[in-house]
Image 1 (cartoon, rainbow, N blue to C red):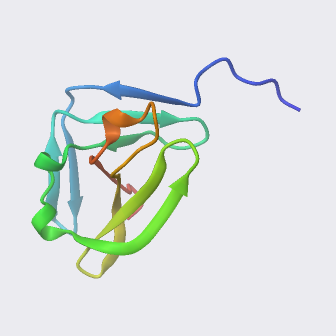
Image 2 (image 1 turned 180 degrees about the vertical axis):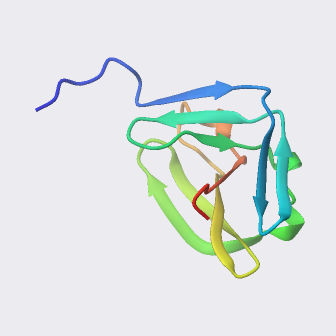
Length: 108
């Protein structure tokens, strides 16, 4: 068995670098106020303030997933592209800084 890491499983890193989310040429988000969430075993994700997301172009999905470290995530679709972004509306203790922010899949 591998030794346990002394690093926290999840770390949050606010930054002022520009982060954009564009799908099929349509800009969906543009911010310099993202928080990068780094979780062991997963790629870093940028959590974008809702004020910097074109929420009028996204529709809530029926998909909900649960993370034992962050809480329940609600998903959003863009046109016929399902579940392109997610948000923790009521994150678990310690993850309050990502509350209501959206993260987008790089893969989609």
